[in-house]
Length: 439
Image 1 (spheres, rainbow, N blue to C red):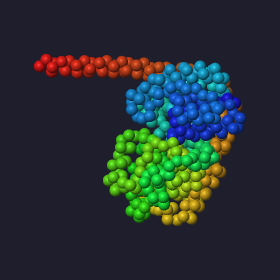
Image 2: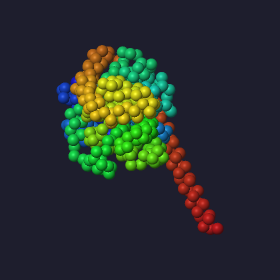
Image 3: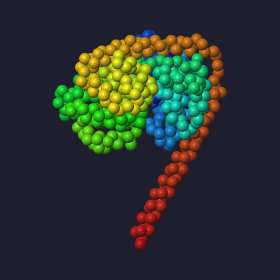
Image 4: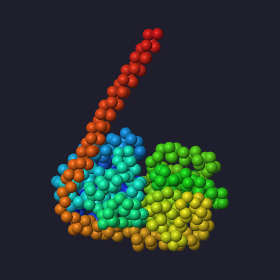
């Protein structure tokens, strides 16, 4: 079997890319012929080179925020990229294409034009995943694209699958939990780094509570900081660390102000994006998640696999990964006091912390291994290839491609108008300068 995996981003700080690389590597160990398509050189291409996996780079130009011009530019660029991917699919004679998010319309269009089956991989509940297209189409239209351009849809949790069931037939959806490469995490956790407490100027015995994820509304680090205040009121020395790239700039700018207002300077640290997250997890005492939803909850699983006790609010997706009082602690979503009490329980009870850490790692090994992930994915692909009748989707692909081309034309016209307005503004400014000079 020959599979092309299409990456949405090009960095392994992003959880979707990280889990796609885990899948690709595990499939390769099972003897599957895997290739990749990546939007830019970066962490992913470096990892693929190390694995010896063939890949091609095709710029996607995907927006990283809700800006309407950025979204328009992304969709406009997708039409050209779809035509390029189609030629590569025909050249490579692939059996199947795997799209690691629902935002890769160009890959789905190309696959339909080349008569290659498509598997979508959805990492967030439908209503969240759809938000990128909210300015351009109704949710029913997005669901139609998933169903008509794709042969099957994978949801990374039962919560995600349930959200998809409102829009797609059940036979087209499967739940497949993301896998964790525990061996790789263990290696990366031991890579030599400056000790975190030394980096922060803290004593070596200070307890650390770590939060890991994008600075975004979803991860809700504002609540994380408020929980830190509640814990700090009782625990005199514990410190908190937030690690992750900025997705929402206004939220990232608000965090230091909130920390200062709550009197937590020197107790809460915001480190930003880091490529040594496993090493930071390994040096922490507790992992804390205050996310309001997850597709599944990779950061929590990574912490658990490194024997770290996990405390989390029982949000969509993540609540499936942790069994309360068995391999972690769950508290009601939004209950900051209960969250603080759970953190304090773990900090004050070494036996509980050790038990949760050991059981958490075993749960990951039992339920979320990279090998189980790859075997589950392979079973889905074999079923898709066996049960998909010959079905020419060229008409559907042409329709979707036509829409993208219309968006491209609109974007080009808008760009020309922007340039014209820019030159007019410059001309007016120059004229004003000369007028003032002559006066």
